Picture 1 (cartoon, helix red, strand yellow):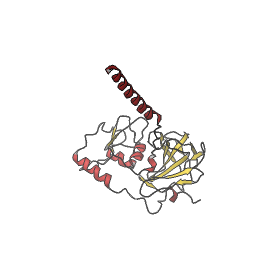
Picture 2 (tube, helix red, strand yellow):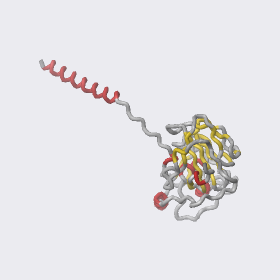
Picture 3 (cartoon, one colour):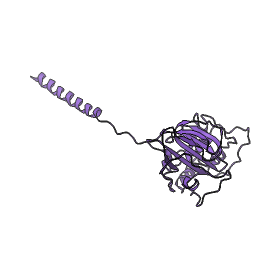
Picture 4 (cartoon, one colour):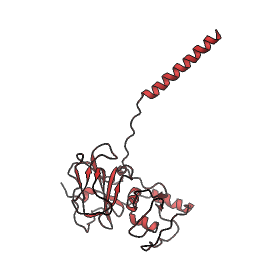
Length: 265
């Protein structure tokens, strides 16, 4: 009699466990929303960043919301700003010290950074809480001439001054041609920046850079000299949930409203 009672109790426990497991497995977890980096205003959180394969100084500056010249100065990297995988870059200025001159071409940067001090951490916290540099009230005239639209399409996402959207989204069709908005040199192409998908960054002069995100196919390589209007990619939906081009312009490291620079439609 006792044996039957134990068996029945054990059977009930097993059935309950199976029911619970089936309920957990049967439910479909909601798909996590795709977080687009261009739609956030966050700057660097860590004091340093280790260089990964495919990175360039320009892509790390873009990712961290810095001017590439700042990173070069803080890390004593000379033009043409060559970095190597495994190198550790400082994302904040050293505290309590005067800026050191950049190394001359041919000199090697220090291979490793010292651990951040309490003063470094305090300076980083202060820098992180400071308001970001505001975009110029009026568009800054570019020495390379006027800008042109990178794609033909409707603007579906607009730039926001507080930094929650650092560019504009332009709707289009998959494989539609993406053109360079101004002449320049490709300083990054790849998918290493989270939320941008297949990305191209073009340096137009010392102050202006532009970015073209979510491409389906990239047609240029780093170092290529690009003409205004040249086809550089085909539109896609990489890193996002729809086909579109996310387009950004930055002036001295600060995002500016592309609609203030592009021709009026």
